[in-house]
Length: 205
Image 1 (spheres, helix red, strand yellow):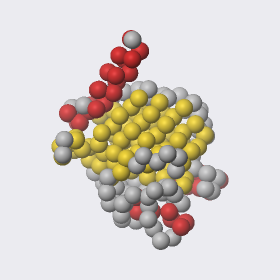
Image 2 (cartoon, helix red, strand yellow):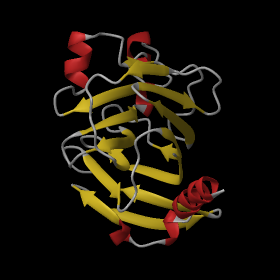
Image 3 (cartoon, one colour):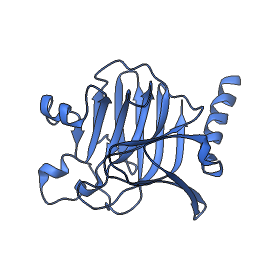
């Protein structure tokens, strides 16, 4: 009973996250704004050069399920949106992120770069693409509208990381953790030159 209660409390705190203040996040190279729309609290990270993160203060994550809704935009090289997790500090963490401008691109090569795994600082997207082409980035099985909200579910079980979009029954991306990172920080992530909107974050340990 105690274990069930602890899990439920964790979910309730995260579901109410939008009702809290900006200082409930540790911001890295971004400004954050919280608004309310259709009953959900929307977290907006603004656009800037280089990557940005909004770490959730006091929240720890190692294994489990991360779910959230996210919206980027269909502007090439200006929309990189996702989450950072297993964070040790602001430069050492793993990330799963999406490139909405590639979701429905005519070029299949671009579509193959729709969802990406990274392990920073050693293995950024360019290093992984060069060393392991097609292994740590994939197209989406059911690509959504690149200008609309979509739902992401990330399952972390040991070294296995699986990514599902909009209720997919099979993962669009499934990878093995490339390096053992022992951090527990988790937060929203946006890439170089990108802003992004996030809502309804849920974490099940």
